[in-house]
Every structure is written in structure tokens, then in C-alpha cells.
Amino acid sequence: MALDAFDGEVCAAATGSPPPPPEGVDGRLSPAGAPANGAEGERDGDELFVPPLNFAMVDGGVFRSGFPNGANFGFLQSLGLRSVIYLCPEPYPEAMNEFLKANGIQFFQFGIEGCKEPFVNIPQEAIRESLKVLLDVRNHPVLIHCKRGKHRTGCLVGCLRKLQRWCLSSIFDEYQRFAGTKARVSDQRFIELFDISSLKHSPMSFSCLKR
Image (cartoon, rainbow, N blue to C red; front, side):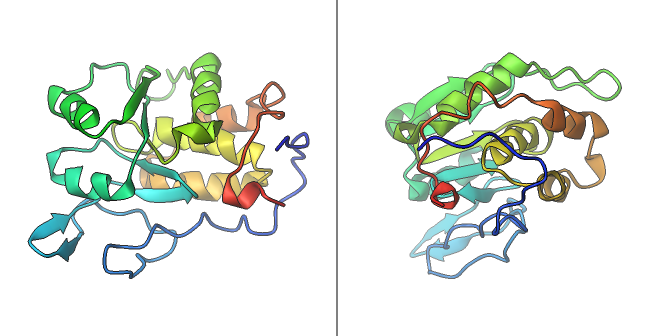
């Protein structure tokens, strides 16, 4: 479905907070809007399901987190992932590569350097190309992650929210919820100035885009 051009003055009805995290294996929901700390999990028989650091649901079939590790494999399997979008330039660990191959999960890497202010330089083209992968429902369910799930992941999700016609105050509230005390003005400025015009006609079928 094609989106209308983004109107910075318009805030969609349900954009006050992101959708709640997905149901746990026992059917209960985590606290709405609260990123998982990576240490919590639900037990199904003898298996412990542990979400990655800063894990949360972005939208139907779209998830975000910090860098997963072996302790998260059972939880990630429960999501039925088709794809992973990795936003760091470093090579992917061999254990993670083996996990992806064993589960038939596609891997997309868009290497964005992790710099600190005032030297933050987020390449627009990398965000634009990663958005194209993210917007293709054939890649869903998909997990987006960087190192901590804060800055690079926050910028990509923020640009997605612009396409979803969230108002900037809601976009920044969500960004700050995950970045916490590490929130960067430069990241938020990048999101505000990011040009979505080349992507506004991309076909989408996210749950909150069906308006």
C-alpha cells in the first residue's frame, strides 16, 4: 500500500507508544513499552526463553534488540524469524552465523560505525537501503539489531516511524525510551532531517499502516 507524504504536523491516532512486546511463551505480556533487559525469560518445560538486551516489538513481524548471544537462541527461534538486519560493520560471530543457517534465516548487514558525539556520522544511504529490506514483508518476521539496540537501531526505527506518519514528539519519545541517558541530539536531528520521499511509495502491510 502506498503511503502519503509525511506530514510533520500529523500524528497517527495510535502513536503515543509502540505496540506492546509479543506474548511470552505462556501467553502473558511483558509491560507495555518496556524494553526487555535480556535477563528475563519464560520457562517452557526445561527450556528457558531469554530475550536479547533491549528487545521489543516494533510492529507486527518487526522486532528490535541489542546484540543477541547463545543464551537468546531459544527465544529467537520462538519468533520464527525469516531475516536479521545487522547495523554494525564488525563481522558477525561464527556462532550467530551457524544459528542463522540452521534456522534458514536471511542475513542483511549495513555497516554503520558506532561513533560518539560530536563525531556521529550516520550514512543516509545505509539507513535507506536497510529500510527497503525492512519494508519488504517477505523478509518478515525480522529482527533489527546493533550492539546495544539504542543508537543505530533507534535511528532506523525512527525513520520507519516517519514513514508511518508518527509525529516527531512520539518518535523522539520512543528513541529516548531505549537510549535512556545515552540519547543523542545528533541521532534525533538525523531522524528529523531524513528524507523519506524516495520510500513513501514503498508497498507496506504493517499492522498500524492499514488505515
